[in-house]
Image (cartoon, rainbow, N blue to C red):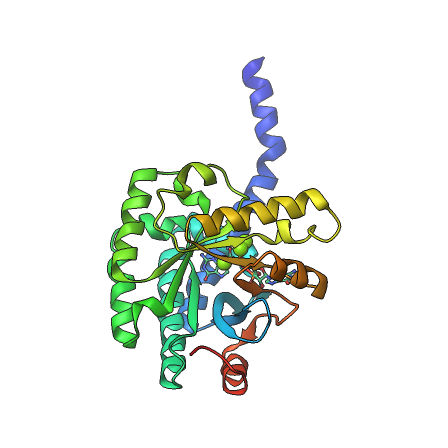
Length: 281
Ligand code: C2E
Ligand code: MG
Ligand code: MG
Ligand code: MG
């Protein structure tokens, strides 16, 4: 009877499973071909000081303009790229491209404007990641300190020791490490003091409520103080309103990223912004 029930169950789920696998295959092939056809691009979102006077850096954000699937935001394809391992070649392309953008800034005399790049846990654990980072930086002829690498707390799910070892190697290279989505993962406080990071990014979900919720504001204030006490620089992400900006400025947050200043920009628009603004050095 159990066997029979199992079989019935299987039959019930089969079409759904097949459909899901098929969709994934189509999308996976699309990602692979997209890389060959040059369908990926980076947008750059500016980061300013809390007064909004100085342009400090950009975060590079991946976009996929797919021939078959249309415009796809990263949240819709990065998880699949991670599952299939395609994040390795895609991530390599991202890194190369971001370094070339940093090179353009350096050529404008704006090497003090950094470029932040997001990486997945899968990339960090892959063999040769540190070597890839080094060779991209060397090929672009930029200073490693112009590159910030954004990691998330999820890198610790696999192996804490391995992650910390790789991060230390990156740190020795001279790149700046930044902990993205700070506070949304686990173990942050346990590992924070042993991490070679220089920057903490406070997640948008915390910023959203600082105007309406006093308790949430205290949490963000504590994060900023904690970071500063550890010698770290603080970035607030997803800042949308002047009110939020004012509060974060009062709390001495070092950098602001969000729609209040700018959405992510195409490369050429980002370059124009640099030309037009007081920035970097
Ligand atoms: P993230 O690294 O936390 O990036 C911040 C996200 O918040 C970006 O979404 C950005 O466009 C959005 N954002 C910034 N300011 C505001 C704001 O004021 N309001 C609102 N509503 N949103 C704001 P995006 O570009 O869709 O990227 C989503 C996530 O995809 C990123 O989150 C990051 O985890 C991942 N991602 C993006 N590019 C890459 C990449 O090259 N490699 C990897 N591995 N992941 C990437
Ligand atoms: Mg990020
Ligand atoms: Mg984030
Ligand atoms: Mg995120």
